[in-house]
Image (cartoon, rainbow, N blue to C red):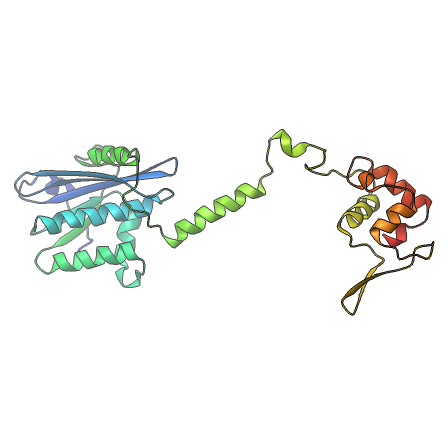
Length: 267
């Protein structure tokens, strides 16, 4: 396998040489690959296919390379020149001893098979500068991304991580629907007042108030001024309030009752 500098124009203009141009494109999380190849007898081979959703452009280039090598193996071509505008894929294959993922290993295996009888050369070419065949490979990649379904569902570990990361970031962004801004039972509860008032209401709602203690794994409560266990339900009843005030917009009045009866320290 050779990855040295090659005269691209000589390859494209020599009728006896076999070359393959490939491309990949991503559009709205849909990626496609395109392969344009010319055999020794002038036969032109075109291939397009869609890749799994969220597949990276880098991996789409590798899938196109794998398809190009399948073309060479099928037609038992002597020498083949693979022309690509993806420097990253060439550099990736250059470090072939470090490749661990499935697609890269398949490519290396196909190159090894071809190299037993012929020469396999990789050459970088600039994109969108009118190189013959490269523009058609770009069109094939675009058509591949528009196909209804992917040819496989395999993804890199890094691609799966990116999908989960995007999903988690979506949860971190607050929703914009007015439903979430409601202040009614069953929707979001918005507390008003001082920080201590908000803390008291939150503790009463969850039941974890200051008077709560665990003795031998059993819940116990400190004594209320009326000498009864100061549980959340008792405190609300003792000050003459109701549970409805705790879960409605009347929380400010409930806090005032707590302060008036001197039981804020228990909450």
